[in-house]
Length: 330
Image (cartoon, rainbow, N blue to C red; front, side, top):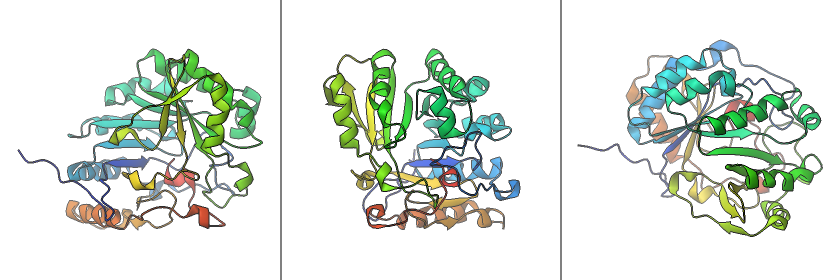
């Protein structure tokens, strides 16, 4: 029996992970993610569910084993349950994950479980309801926290809670976030603020290096590194002394993980990107809608992977990546 071919780029990195943005829209308006001025793709500009499933099916045939659904907020797109059912039918897709803000988990958790989604990343930048409203524009903290509790109750695992740490915004809660790992089987993850989009919210003064975050958390106990597997992603994970959960750090600015990057991104409007922090992308939507064959899709995927840069250069760029995070997918 033949096995799927392996996708390897020019720097000997095996690409096995596809992040798929279902929509550029979100029910929240987080200050570091939402484009300014607010814009919205027309429905016809988004890839249809059938187009998304076709691309994913071809990518899996090439050797992709892991798919993460992102947005915007992926669960905000209408009839997402239909898409999830189609995703569950793709043979060879071993690992389906979701990044969400948690607001719609109560509504869709049964559909996610039926589709085989077990691994969740839930975005939450503050434990203070009033600050949550300031950061996101909406008073939905209670729904997000209820979604996290529901995810644990229903057996999703791992459940990772992502905090974008921003100096002067929420850094006074860094230790309080880590304390949640003492009480719950959660992976509390700290993400360095990144220069994505042309919004004025980016400023290097807001960036908190992961090393500083780790030093602050150390007041709670010893942090012991956990060995990582190839499919585990870029987070450096630590066990916290006395905790039932764990602590993770994602540091694209201070501690690049480009040499281990195994991912490709499909934006909500059908562009393939080999790097989150590079604006180079390949138009796949036009190929899909002009009679392109599966071989054409395969060739574009391979070509995009072969153009994957060795690493990002955000530390050398005054403006950062101009692409909108809500369109690219987090």
